Length: 245
Ligand SMILES: C[S@@+](CC[C@H](N)C(=O)[O-])C[C@H]1O[C@@H](n2cnc3c(N)ncnc32)[C@H](O)[C@@H]1O
Image (cartoon, rainbow, N blue to C red; front, side, top):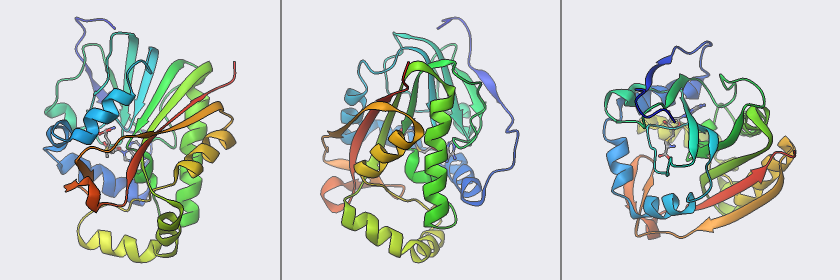
């Protein structure tokens, strides 16, 4: 990465956002202390540890949120993509990082150009409308990741996940949850199981798929707040997969 370059202002979004994307963008634009909160959570230290050695070469971080909790030593070019880029006003990004305003389901990037793509705590925010739409959008995001990676490139998904029973309950209560979350001013979210994420990666064309649990710290973030980990139904996992060369 060119050390003396300053991060450039993000390019404007080229297309209208979907409904819940709009809610997400406004929510994260308004959340002034997000990066500081992340920095104070021990579970996030464990997530950062899980990223050691994973990212190199030309890297895209989709749904960056201005959180660069990974070593940039082996990164020669870093592109941060997000529907919200308000964080630019409050965080210092690595020199030379390029910002792009855009959505994970239609990445503002060319084909086959990147060595690694990271989606960290993004996938549950791809919820939209109903279960089927949410599932389709998540699958699209994985296909988009596949498109922009070089053959031999790697996707790394760090995600909060639930067990099968909880996922079924979320599916059945989708409409109700959406209404309840709207009442507390939170965007709709949908948490998948590791097996779902694994299957979406496979459907997108990835191979050598690995799913690893990430140890839980004492504290985590859930629905926009800091919680003792033992009180929340989510854990974290890392999926790593390769676009065949
Ligand atoms: C929970 S934050 C995660 C931020 C950071 N990656 C982290 O690990 O802390 C989710 C981020 O995803 C972004 N986001 C939500 N929906 C998105 C979408 N459809 N495309 C791209 N980014 C999105 C939000 O604006 C927010 O910055």
